[in-house]
Length: 336
Ligand code: NAP
Image 1 (tube, rainbow, N blue to C red):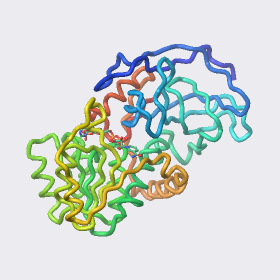
Image 2: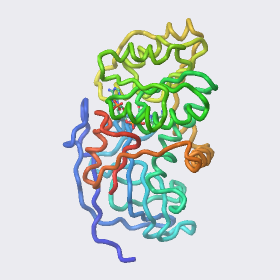
Image 3: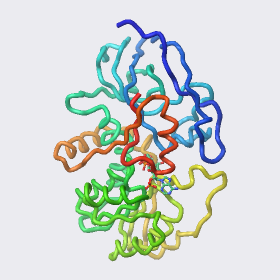
Image 4: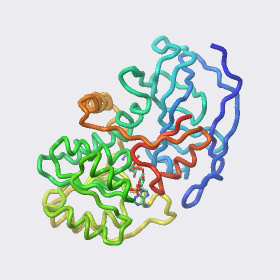
């Protein structure tokens, strides 16, 4: 296949303090890269933007290295092989893996997961079968350990992780309460996903609504947000409750740590447990198990996918920034 002459890429050109802005990114045009031995060239179709990238943009080292300045940013994506120097990958294969924010990206075979597009749609590979879904699956089942009849409260419940947590918790027979911002999200959780309750934290009486929605208290709190939402949820913990510390998005753009009420007392008096985790690396070796189960639930229509898809590679920074103002319902993707 003749190679197209150019490759659009989104580079990080400066590191923000506080909330990032579009000025921190730049659309650059380069040549399509040449592949070396064992490498694979991929035409990128969809890219995922995720809150953890805020740390990479800021230069913080956590599970992933910082994005270098003046080079393409990267993250989970799907695409099709256009050229391969590896025997297991052929032109036309659909793959998911770590890809540049670009039209074309090079990957090595060990970074890629090949899937059948007749069985799994490319966007599903990034949503119900992608990294956030693995986070939901292992965080809930391994740490939350849901039991039938228990109450679970989930913050950022209408997002990529939260939506899957809630649906798995329903499968496990839990009483599921979602916390999210805005009426559209609340209606989606109640009507489409059949959550038992949903709390719009942008309303002034949200704390009372949360208490009213959990008359039996909270057995599992799946925390994606932190801050005042978590302060309130902690007050409702039951004896032997489990707090799954998944994310703290409310503090990702703060320059100074947000010191709120010290809530550990609630853990002591309820003999409760709070545990943090990083899905990569903690559960990377079990992703296939998670994918197999989620795919089965998807086929049985026990789990519904939902993606917000922004059009155009050039709009990746905008889609990323939208995560911090709640623009997305479900998994935020960009169609390149
Ligand atoms: P997401 O929920 O799809 O998108 C982020 C959502 O967070 C937004 O839609 C917004 O929803 C909410 N939000 C943003 N700023 C907020 C604030 N100040 N207060 C309250 N809510 C706010 O993102 P995701 O990919 O599913 O990730 C959810 C969380 O899990 C993030 O904290 C992320 O860092 C974490 N995470 C952790 C791991 C891990 O391995 N531990 C892996 C993946 C993700 P509303 O409209 O409802 O405000």
